[in-house]
Length: 172
Image (cartoon, rainbow, N blue to C red; front, side, top):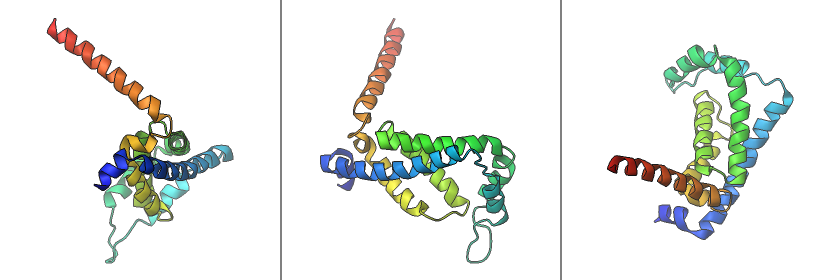
């Protein structure tokens, strides 16, 4: 019942738009802040997350696999992450604010939120993850008041054209 409300109701679309704009503003300001400072460097954060991993009540490292990822993949490739993080945050914010490819933007926003969370940054991540899952669950309705109203049908039409072309080739 709640899923149907989120996915189809026009009042839900308005509420989702407010949530989307709130999260979008948060993402875009974080991204533009990093881009405009000109010197974003994730290496300090990565080194801190590796040196002080998330630990359980018994003192054992909870997400050892993620610490290994940070140590062996993210830190050696920090120059790539120094571009991906601020550009990704900006694009996620732009997608959410404009309501363009909303579910894709929110999916990648959740991926980044979970990455920060697994590295030990709590701050507003739990709230953002909760709101993000609401937007992701709503699907198309989350971007109905936005560019998704035109973009999603266009992509669906393009997908159906390609499927029809492949089907006609198979018949011949």
